[in-house]
Length: 469
Image 1 (spheres, rainbow, N blue to C red):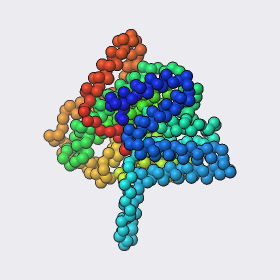
Image 2 (image 1 turned 90 degrees about the horizontal axis):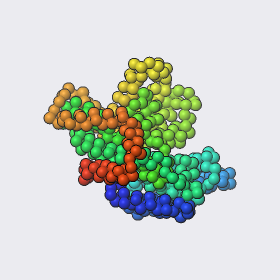
Image 3 (image 1 turned 90 degrees about the vertical axis):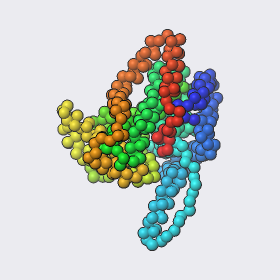
């Protein structure tokens, strides 16, 4: 089930009703939410559910051993638990990558062989719930989990359906307390959650689909067929596509969870307004960035061992993030670029501080950051690193305009960036507008807006980008 389908909406209405009906009976309430989350996941494939349930059980017992410091070996159990989770990730997501790499290395050594193939099903949301499991084990080791959760509570934390497939990646010590005593008894700012649902549907059904269909898919597939202006327009359009795609899921995830009484962590905060690359990663997919910082960058040593080591740690952490996105070299290269940029700014922090001390300097810093980010997205979108450089080469080909240029696409891109500039104000206005409506008028307003968004959207829509991660 996907958020913007009528099937999911029917499922959610039923879950929402029982979510509030069962509040007086906390155990039944938690068990119901777990069953609902498992059903949501099983719709994709029952084997996916089996893997999620099995991993939840394994991590429950490993976490319990760490929490209790069983035989004084909590460090061993932490390493064992992380290794188990990474092994599952490697088998399902990276086996073919390492198999082909090993075959190529053996061939260079004069050994021609074919390693065994493994036809493993791609597990939707695997990376996200494994990240939750690893962070839970690490937090147990660090003493952040004071009271060890019951099996149902921990399983629900791993499987909570609004956050299961693409985040936000909630931390256990933020989510688990919300299960106490039947959870929240009222909804905090309900109109905000409906505004987020509208925002998410608008971004996915209209903006993402329109720009992907009318420019980015075609230009990124064959950039040689387009002039430099159209290629540049496609690069700008993709910056919008990836932001609107990822943030649309986040908006709807926070909205659906909020209507059930759950608070979710923020995941995006006007990232394209960032003045530095560090600020960008504090504003872009915040829960993923924080995860990489807390569980990769800081354990590597962070900034505690000098500038050179800090740069190396940044490159390693961000390259790992790139590799997490996919077992292909263009993702690895994209991650390396991010780490190199972060390392550059860390070394030349004096230049950064000088630029940020004046209005012209802040503009230059913003422009440099934005330009780097959108050009780096090229390597995120293409199929190979070579395709990325081909795209950049076509940008400077000298062919300015061609017949594929469409004025309405340029207008759509401009409207998309205008929405970005006023996104927070639009959400606040939509929330206030709903709050001032009489109940009957508000219900009509909701039905009209959602009907309009669904009718305006295409019959066939691409899956969320992060479903493949």
